[in-house]
Length: 139
Image (cartoon, rainbow, N blue to C red; front, side, top):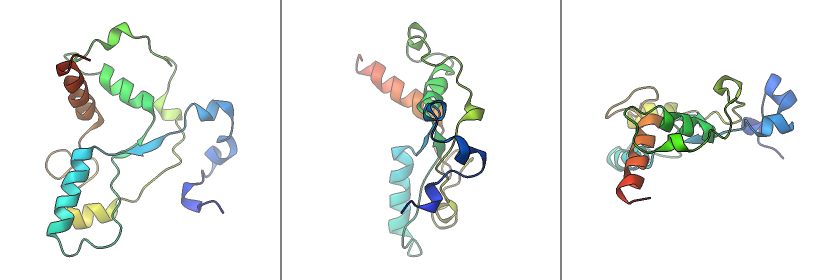
C-alpha cells in the first residue's frame, strides 16, 4: 500500500510519472548542524518525546547548484562548469514530500524561515560552507 502523505495530489498527480516530471522530482533536506542542535535540545527538554521531524524544505539538486552559483564573492570556481539544465524553473518543480515541522518549532524552538540560533541554516550558507571546506582540502 502506498503511503497517502507521499502521494502527489492535484495537477502533480496527473503528471508525476512522465519523463519530464522525473527530471523535476525532489526530496527534503536539513543541515547536519541543525540536526545536531535538535538532538541537544531534545535531550535538554523533557517534552521532546516521540518522533520530531526536521526539514529545511523541499529541494531538487539544481537548487543547490543555483545556491552555490549565487554566492558573492564566488567561493569555488563553478563558472567553469556548464549548467546541466539551464532551463530549470524552480516554480515548476513537483514536491512530493511536505513534512510537518510544527513539532520541531513548538518543542525544540527551531523555526523554518528564520535564520540564526533558532532557525534552520539556509541553502546558501550550507553551500558556502561546503564549498569553502572543499577548497581548503584542495578538491
